[in-house]
Image (cartoon, rainbow, N blue to C red; front, side, top):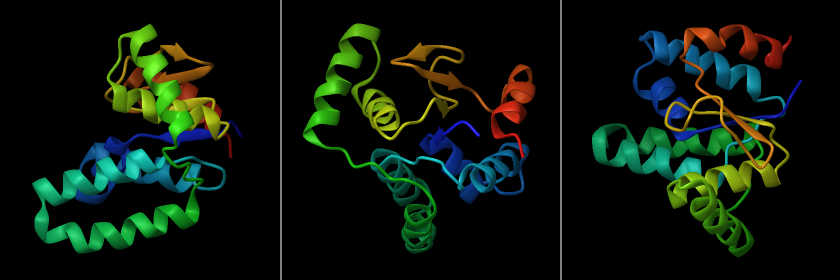
Amino acid sequence: MTRLALDSNILIYAELEPDTEKGARSADLILRAARDGVIPAQVLGEYLRFVQRRAPAAFEEAIRQASVYQAAFLTPPTTDAIINKASELARAHRMQLWDGVVCAASVAAGAKVLMTEDMQDGRTIEGLRLINPFAAANIGAIEALLGD
């Protein structure tokens, strides 16, 4: 299986909208990617901040869930080297710095694919392919990547 990284929107849908189509798809991706997947520390921070701001009553549970993610996934930290690489990516690819952090940390952890709804679907950055897991056109490619 190709090592996959997950962006914060996957965690948010799975935890805050579990009864929606995106929530169910996200939960499935999380379960299937956990064997060898990556959730950068930046992503956990974005997830926690979103919950704290939008669903404060769920914040305590989100903190517990972040610990579960840390135990089940590789969680590369945001180091000075990652910030430096993210700065290069932001400049070279005209992307947001924090998206660059997610990409740089994912690449450093050996991910080949980043599941994200927020970045340009199909783009490749530093060998990391960005895939929108909610686009119907990507379902076959995702199944091939996850290959059970």
